[in-house]
Image (cartoon, rainbow, N blue to C red; front, side):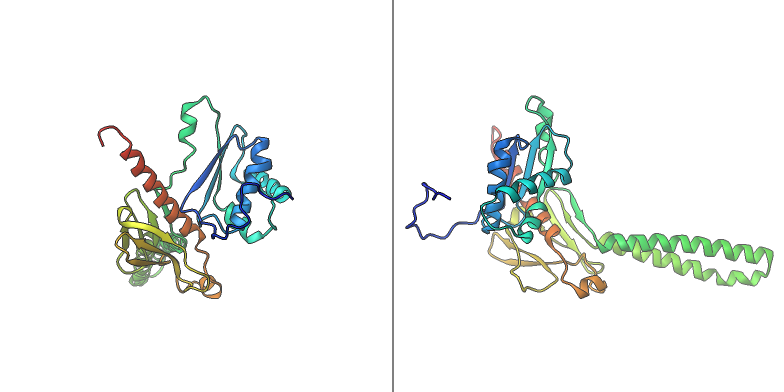
Length: 282
């Protein structure tokens, strides 16, 4: 392999890791992307030079799904990457891969190339609570019907057990309420994280300087940290994950989805502010 003629062998400066960013490759189905660009992106990730939450968006005419595009990228990277293959690097890179179908003559197609990053909700165990709530509603209805039938056909004393369906409905309401609260929510103006109980926490994008990814060995419940413009650090605990879930107790939870949502939301906010600043009269 020939040396890079643009790199000085005497330069001992540390390589700089890019800030939150994404890459859109137009014509990603062509030879240039397959043979040069995609392997180069993997090599950057393998050297630790891409930020956490990096997004790779491919734009082309093929009718590919995200999974099909991932397979194409995977085959290109495996065959032509210059750095050793590591599954952990690929998994992190693949999580941010998207494909958008479009051509270069339809104006509306370009508007679809940027996913909606400003309206995202992560619930996890919150959805389980809602499911349990609906199960309790069904059980309450069945118990109510059963007691009415027994009272009409048999002994009216059975009506005193109507408190059972009432208790089930109260349990359903509690699960619905808790399930709707436990979430990480990305909105155009702020992000909110909240547990099953307690008050919601929120940080406005305008007050945020950067989303920080916890170092290996950090607390398992720590999903990210927010560095504010005033220098203060706010820890973002994964309150939307149930601490009593056996899966979360046996193995450290995966915070990759939440970290990408936070970083992508911040990038989208900065891009929107940049566009507004470029408008006439501002």
